[in-house]
Image (tube, rainbow over all chains, first blue to last red; front, side, top):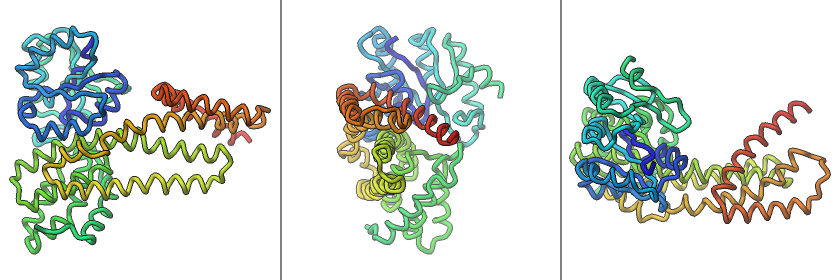
Amino acid sequence: MPILLYRVDDRLIHGQVVVGWGAQLQIDYIAVVDDELAASDWEQDLYRAGLPDTLEGRFLTVERAVEAIPIWQENPKERGIVLTRDIATVCQLAESGVLQGQEINIGGLHDAPGRRRILTYVFLGDDDRRELIRLGKTGVRVSARDVPNARAVELDQLLKS
Amino acid sequence: MAELTLMLRLRVLARSLAIQGSWNFRTMLGAGTAFALIPLLSSLFKGEREALARAVGRHAGFFNAHPYMASVAIGALARMEFEAADQEEIQRFRNVLVGPLGSLGDRLVWARWRPLCSIFAVLLVATGAVWWVAAGLFLLLYNSAHLSLRAWGLGLGWREGRRVGAALRASPLRRLPDRLTIPLAVISGLLLPPLALAIGEGSGVEPISLIGISLILAAAGYWRPATVGRAAALILVLGSLVMIVLANAA
């Protein structure tokens, strides 16, 4: 299990991910899949500023990630987390088939116009709901959980409320 | 270019102390950040009430960071407003700051500096210091770094503006959490025996053998910081509970 967590979190690399999940899972890298971020050096600079030396930050386009993820999954020497900013991006990954049978963690989607509060850390709009349903149909398990010790909330419960 | 005068700096810093004052799950530090920005924004939009109100509104939406590191964001965002940067760019920049400032601050302050200062204070009490001296030293030590961090962050953000990411990566602050790992584990190792003695008062253990055990645990902390750190955290929590129970029973 060399990729230990697939997570959707609009804050991307932040304290919950580095201190919470990172320490618990003892990872070597955090990979962010985001087309815009992959093209922006100053933004990558900022995200890397939040990482300890022992943790590598990787920034990839969706296209590159589809090639890289199967290789990382088979690499027993490195342990990592894959992050996306939104459900649409992880949906693209899932539809390419590289996440078959994996669990997707919804870790943080915050307030924005048109969104409604579902959990303290999950706010969803109509588009987000449609994408969640789409994601659920791609053969992955979906649940929400902000930090490792918290209770997981399953997809059908997210969509019900 | 406008200047960040001492007066403005102090007013912003004073306001930033209340940055979590209206914390909520919807906007988190948003309103607090806007509140701290007001002195800077009102010097920029002097006499333009409408423009000022719009600017404050722009900065009151969802934002999060470590509360001390939020100073970096306040400085950098104010700088971009003064440079009349494109609003879309400011918003994008604001969103990007959330993760890194949270990660850096959580690692440095919550995971290292605060436990380090607390354990130092408990060590003082466990080795015989009067409680209010230890508590006073804790407040002094912890807050001198805390307030310096806020002031430094504001200055850095203001100076660097949108280039603050590269400046943060180059700053010694980025490596500081890792540098504090070993000191934290060493001081935890030192603390455990005196704490155990304080808990089991009058158990008849020779103080001299305790010093020996202390030094061994401190050395273990140097070689295996993660293991000693975890053990110490567990024992500190359990030890404190035992102490509370004993104190109430007596």
